[in-house]
Length: 170
Image (cartoon, rainbow, N blue to C red; front, side):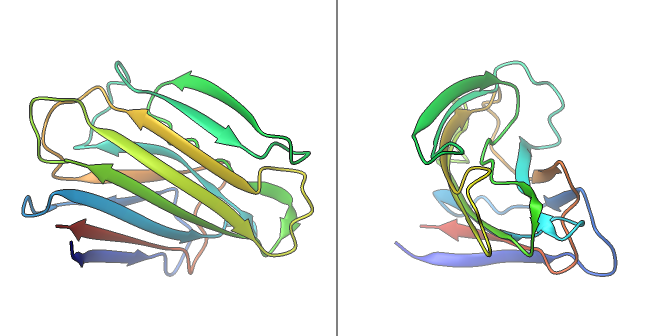
């Protein structure tokens, strides 16, 4: 299995709430996003939403997460909507970098809904007030092949220097 870089987006000039990838080729079996982000207020920022093909219909989106909790004790929950839930925001600690991997299998299949898996960690002077490690899984409401996707920051814009790379696998 090979990884092929499709595109890297680095936030330059000013902070941005959304990062989009358009014209995704259908020549791979799976997709993976590798994210290294800071918040515009010099804090960690998580990816709050992931949508496909400009989808604004939240029907059918859902997911579950498991994280370390703010005491290190594992916890989990579920949600409805187009969230990625890779929560690692730490608004009270500066210079935190959030690193995430979002894996999207079988993105060209048109007979089943799209699913994803994510894992997230934060780095820097983390003192445990928020989640240091999160894993999540989810599904979208669409069966369409993915030709574009957008990730949105939650709680803060992505700061200048934040980078998200899209890879094709297969």
